[in-house]
Amino acid sequence: MTGDHDDDHPELALDDADARLIAELREAGPAAAGEPDWGALSAGIDMTAGSFYAGVWASNVDFGDDTDLEVDLYGGYRTEWAGFAWDFGVVGYVYGNAPSGVNYDYVEFKVAASRAIGPVTAGAAVDVSPNFFGVDGEAT
Image: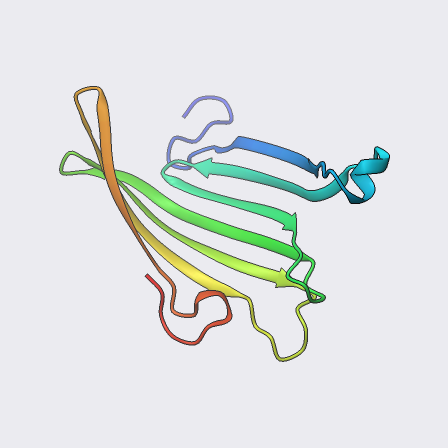
């Protein structure tokens, strides 16, 4: 070990950060008077440490009820094995200010594999949720 770097403990790295403001211009309504409809504001951040990754993404939402926020928390592990790139991940979707008795929150599990074949990379992914978007049951 040299300096402050420890090879047994990978450094935490900020991979990506973004923020977006999306405006929807309409022919009628507020936009007709020159005012845009500020449809969505979203922001996210992704970090890695070795083969592990984690992130958070958030946006305002409008489901026609009091629900006004979606926050996605995700993490996973990427590796290579048997000539394939593998990604094992989990995402938690959390919704703010949902009405009483409504449960939009759910968790999703992912397994993905890909392989470079010449200039093309081919892959497949399976996402499974034991409680998909407020519905009892399973979605794949």
